[in-house]
Image (cartoon, rainbow over all chains, first blue to last red; front, side, top):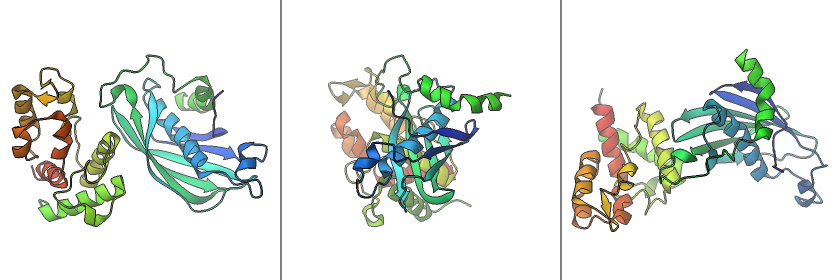
Length: 158
Length: 129
């Protein structure tokens, strides 16, 4: 099983930008521990949601040939709480992409209103600076991620 | 119009403050990017991207940080640069002061060559030709 922290892509512009949404539900077990008297969506999981949105955008830009790994959270600022029943929107855009890495800028919205920014740096680890070798199989992009963007890619390809 | 060294320094300072989360006053000309400002390897990519954007320049891989040189066994032996390696480093890092490093070219000390001034010199060459 893999934790997917986005429910659906709404927009996908190859190599440029992507928008995904996540509906926060009290049926999610982690909210019962964070916190029982007042459940709120952890910011760390919003960073993961943005990393999945932006990471798929970066991966698709190179035809999923690269293993795209979150290397650095350059900025993460969330200014309000997200609670069950809210919808989070992650808007990500590629700022720079090179053979070895990519940087993205992202806006987080709660029910359509901006509540923060998450800017990330991804490494294409096969092109990493230390020259370390990794398994040939692309363990980052599996079927689950591809299925998430498949409907939007069809419209991009048309 | 060519940029002055002061203008370049101010922009480099801003880039480093944003990339490394350090304070303005820590980013002095002599500050070492890794040892003093805490940069890790991935931060060099972040810095490169930010410099490209801030100065509207292209920084080809290996130009600012000649990392490929260190993976070449011809240039590194027993943890030190060989004479050939040193020649290569000098050719590639004209923006750095290698005087001290040359005396004992230990690979582990190579990151100490990257000071704020090294980056300022590199950018000055790029923007002013």
